[in-house]
Image (tube, rainbow, N blue to C red; front, side):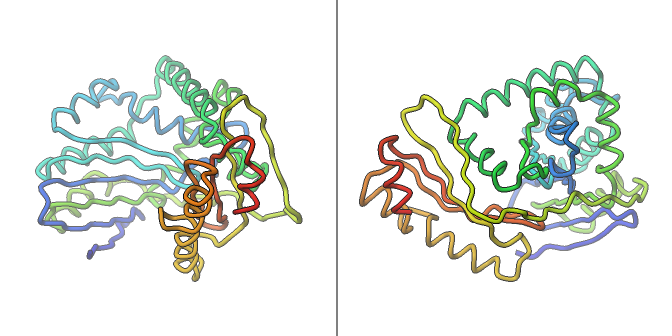
Length: 319
């Protein structure tokens, strides 16, 4: 699949992929900013910002105004925040590309961050955090990252904590946006039934006037671990969830493809070695997987499984 790369004068990077056999188009605005860009006192602000982007602008004053407009187009839309990026996207009929680009640029750069909506969404995210903590299969990932990365931002919860979420203010949001939502930290991708030059012109129309500003660098990760480490959290559950992992290549390492193949052989499907030995041959658990978590300057290979509480030691030995 061919795609075209361009860069606006203000540093915004563009990716366009014509797919003429489709009747739809997807537009995404992404920022090279996530939880690793946060200081400890505002932990969770990257994800909180993602929520607030849908809370209203001057032209579209409420969540309902935004969602109603997009729903009227039959669009699918969402957003996501990880350690190193935040993305906003809309998928709709191809003829609606100018409108969805207008909506995306409006909500991302003109959100109001009204105090009453901040307080309302604060409660929503606190409930999201409780939901995450209530799921041992999910929570064990946080314990693993905390053990692996320590007090570095990569080791902290993307969602934040009850304490930091409770103290984030309107000024904090605008300071965060001013630092990280800059033109040279933006990538726009458009794929679907598009005329490439026309799509580029439409993107320039909504983002070309952004002022060109340099963007900072997140805190570099330097591993300090010298020996094996373990973290345990006891819960009254009928199953034990655990992760075994080791440091590995970062995202752009020249051997990343080889590592991906290795991980797939180890635990990437029903014919993988781990699935065969843990589930098929021994019946130790329902799920077992291998994966590669990778960042710009760090990474790890990890094996996850959920097994019978009385057979944890056996499962670890087999792995």
